[in-house]
Length: 268
Image 1 (cartoon, rainbow, N blue to C red):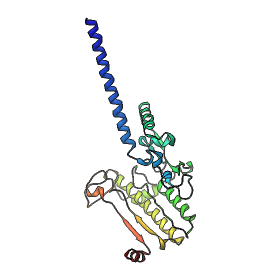
Image 2: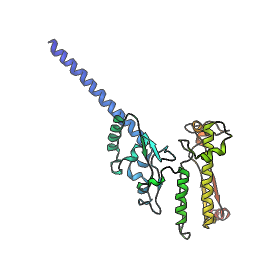
Image 3: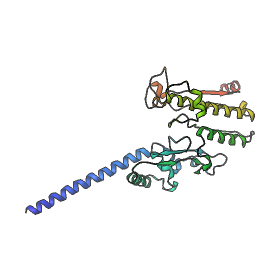
Image 4: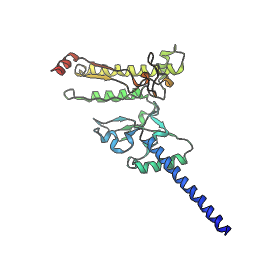
C-alpha cells in the first residue's frame, strides 16, 4: 500500500510542477506580447508605413526610417527590442513572433545589435552606415524637395530622431559646447544644435525652390526633455517618463509666410 501512495504522491508533485511550468510559459508570452505591442509600427505588417498610404518601393511618396526605437545614430541599429526588425515581414505575426522571440531570448545570453533602417518596405542601403542620423534625414529631404514638381502639393512628415537616446552627436557640434561642464548636457546641446542646422537647411531649400511662400511649417514634440539624458525643462517640474508638466508639455512652433491669407480663408 505504501509504494502505491508514494507513486501517487510523486505523480501529484509532477503534475503541480507541470502546471507551474505552463503558467510560467503563459506569463512569458504575455510579457513578450506587451513588449512587442509597445511599437505598433511593426506589430503586424498592416501597421507598417507601406501599408498605410506610403509607397513600398522606396521611391516618391515612400517612407524612410526605422521601425523600432533608440537606434544608434551612426550604425542605425538597435538592441534587444529591435530584434523584430531582422525578421522577414511574413513572420511578423503575433503568435509566430511570440514563439520566435521567446526562442531568441532563451538561446541568446544578451541581445545584440540589429540594423533597423528601411527605405519603403526594403532595407536601406548600407552606404548610409556611419552617416549621422540628422544628416542622413537632411539628405533624404533634399532628394524629395529637389525631385518635387512645385505645381503639385507637397506633404512632408519628418520625425527627427533627435534628441532621443542614445545621446550621440558629431564632434564638431560637441566642440561648440565645450563650456558646458556636464557631459550629458553638452552632448544633448550638440544634438539640438545639429537639429537646428537641419531645420535651417530645410527652410533654406524650400525658399530656394520657391515653395516657402506656400508652405505651412509645424514643429512639435511628443514629450518633455529626458532629465536622465541631458534634458532640462525648467521652470516646469519633471521630464519624460513623468506626468508632471515638464513631462507632458514640449516646445511647439508654427510658421507660414502667407499666414494672414490663411487666417482670412479660415474665417470665411
